[in-house]
Length: 361
Image 1 (cartoon, helix red, strand yellow):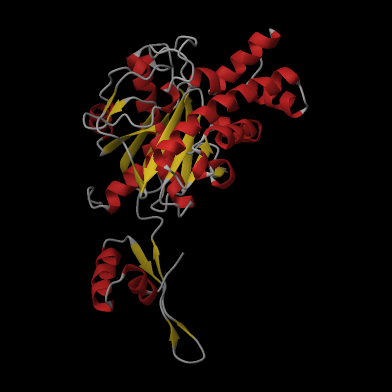
Image 2: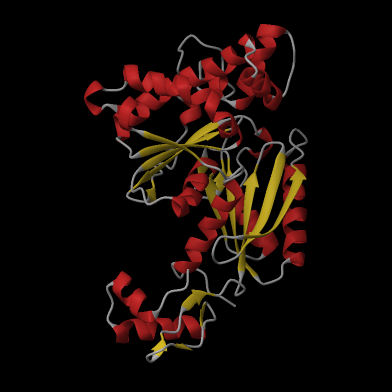
């Protein structure tokens, strides 16, 4: 939204001269545009300032297990172009990397403005310090890949790596004024983007948010991570499909199972109810530990949140610490963005630019 200099000075707590110097620098860099003042009945209306949406763009990449999504985003985080391509999962490290690189190079060639940085969101665990993808259970082709180093060399652009659930939480910050919230990303795997005082919390080693590998049944089925009874083995999108298959001997996509559940099919309803129950157990632990303002459900599985939330809410009602009254008062929101991961990856690159870590051309 365009703002006048006086409005910005009040909002930022700056004097008009200090703001004038800052705005002057931003105009000189081409980051801010100033419209001509308009005449009103008495005097002139202040000239509004706005971000220049065509000064540059960044690339945001979602390393989905089956499909990569790459996008170009302007300085406001708005998408300019989106490209999807098969990942080549199962064909080895060089194949999945070469497909990513080819798609990224193609998008850069098509960009309407300079692409100045790249953000990549990956399933965890990852090492932020080394720019390395470690051992995501569902994407072994990427294990131990130093992705940041390779992309920076091959694309010749600063590159930033983020956990996919943390990236989704970063994107959601644009949609909320909440200071403290937890973003639960529901897909084949499950992750939690933990936001404290509007900053993503990564933990000491950078592994915070691996919610999908919280054990909800110590005697449950083995998980590719090496644990047993992991949450994503019960409540992930693939787990819901597998549960329906075991109940009915029919292999159906999640969207069809959801349609059947909405029509009252008992096996489909049970498949979602058990997933919601497991999410509820996990949510009880999260809210007792972090005392968030709200929980956010996002990602592909959140499209069916209406089938999951009743069980989730029931477990918060009956098992969260009673004094807190979570079942009655905790707000549970559904992110309407179908895929928040790529835009969230772009947010990482934009943040580096606005912090001054990346010089603009």
